[in-house]
Length: 464
Image 1 (cartoon, rainbow, N blue to C red):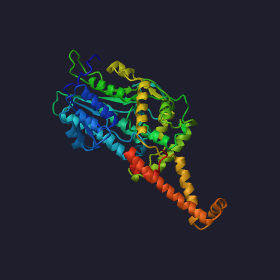
Image 2: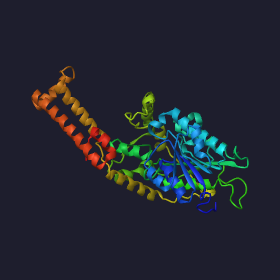
Image 3: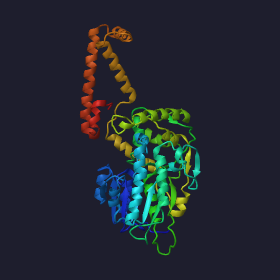
């Protein structure tokens, strides 16, 4: 395409579903920077880490659920172009919540399509995923000619529901709008690789939280396994170029817009092993780099066990007391099976070329996490947790419980070390007092230096 950088943006009204998310916020800000008349953010959240920046830039907030048709209709009234980013089920516990993933990803997309048809929206850019074609079989330098992965074979609700939604969006391309038969809705789909950048909220926080606990001691699959990543600014560029590719009023251009009805793979163009890619980030945070290699088949077995357990816990998955699963099958495939794609079609048809290199993108991401760590307090690793809990239970059983069965051995060992029951009980009382004092100290320290952490620091202590 040979268009100005602000073609189809200046003086135009936009709506971004999921506009308070990581990518959505970056897109809203870029649209306003390029001269958009109005940018509306439709998001279920009342606030996010980007709310203040978006508000200062002039983004119009609409709090609402894409599952509610009337809310979507109000948000899209009078809009020329829609970016549909809102989704559910990408990672962690969300991946097990099949019903909600279908409601948000499929029903929500249907509501967006209906509102576009009702209110004469001209352009719809849908953010899809690599998983519409990838489901665990290796793909090397794939392209858009690949068929959709069979719906019934998807291992997670996210990939399956996004595939259905993308097909609905693309089949709606060229549909006449209800309000004006002379206006047609043109649609396209962007399929991004794994997204990274400063402030990414899906993958990296979960990975680094495991590393902080000392649980990142293994990597999955052969070192030759490669997959794609895409820096957030590159993805935002691709989304804007896709919206330009849907313009039907370019002087001198006739026929259907170049991007109408099309899907595009978007990445940085540098496939790499996931653990190799993340190693500099681990090292910069002083976390242990995974060294033990686990076979993909073994990892799948472990992930299926976690899937079974979390399926049993389905009614309570929204509860904060249930931690994120260590691993799920779809995540094993993502890091343990080669799958990377070419962005040649996006380059030829909409002019996409990554403007931020992987080196620059990772450097910016590392700087963000280093600054964030500087302002926060790390808790102990899982091994310290286990040592303290097991140690306190053993001392408690020796000091307070009758010597029955295995407890005879526990008491015997304690008497051999401490010589008398009085000393054992004194050790228990002092240990409890020290741990309580440490918890109070950690709470005051967190309240002073890391307020966001203060609510949990008293319970977990601190190693700083």
